[in-house]
Length: 427
Image (cartoon, rainbow, N blue to C red; front, side, top):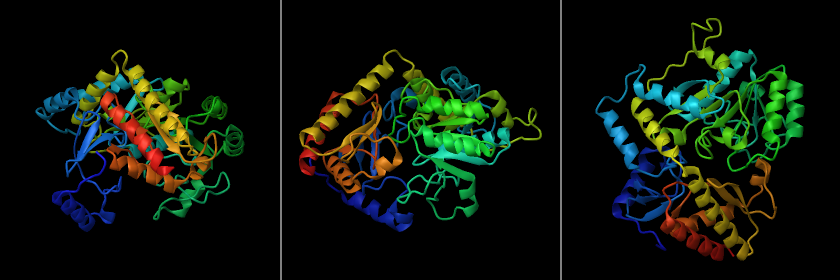
């Protein structure tokens, strides 16, 4: 496919979206298409155009769309009931599996979204520590709550550790409670923690920040600092959980936090996320154990049995021998093909990330290790690149190629051809 066709139905739906949805979108990706279906490593739009899918619903569909084992598990649970607002078998079994799989997990609480998960993780840490401030990293994404939306996408970064709000409607007082450090810079991070350690309730970090792998020693240095000052360390693994390894980025990189959040992959494409971690912190969710510092956490769909059934089926597949070897091999092949195509076209660029999750930054730099390095990339060229891929049957987000186990040889070959074509067009 070299060009996309629009049907009257898709055009009519786009017009309805513009009429009934703010900005004509659901708040997410806006490429002017309406997705109708997804199977394996591909999706189709309402006009029948077929795409190799590296968006993967923003990451959840690691095993591919409409996997028959997940569908079977969901259909079985649907016949038994959809939600109960009480303990249910599927959620309890999924919690057990999480504790067995994830290094830091001793107890688990479920939420419906990653935003809720990071919000409650921060609250639990502040309750445990009896301190109000948090430290996050510039460019780190932790959802849509007030604390999270500080210094995520700013085009005018402030001097560290000052945070900058990325959204209207956030109280100015939140800025005083959020300190910001540069990812992969242990020296500046250490200075901030040493200065504010007695005010910090938590340090939260994506161990793999958006597309940035941690430099050697960075995560361990952060772990050592937080242990030194008794500050809970939170790994936000909503993206990386079960993606890089079965035990998440904490297994992959060999550094164990106090708390973590997970979602996306472990939910099998359904609305489910979690907070997991050490019992002495997680016990603040238990009124019988922490009556004076108890944190209520009520949610209509917490541990929803349909979502938990999908999660259990997904994890059963991911545990099979050779799963992660295959995933990393596919991702590495795609990464290499992308960099080769751009290098052969003599387009200044660097491909960053890990095999299951990567993208390109169009820059003269040979290495990008932090948010400001990514900010300096040529966004207009990236948009042209993304648009060209879309026109040639390859769908990705504004940033990120999410690789799946369902991507097959035909998918990879189409993608490699699209890379070559995009590089020629950009040159």
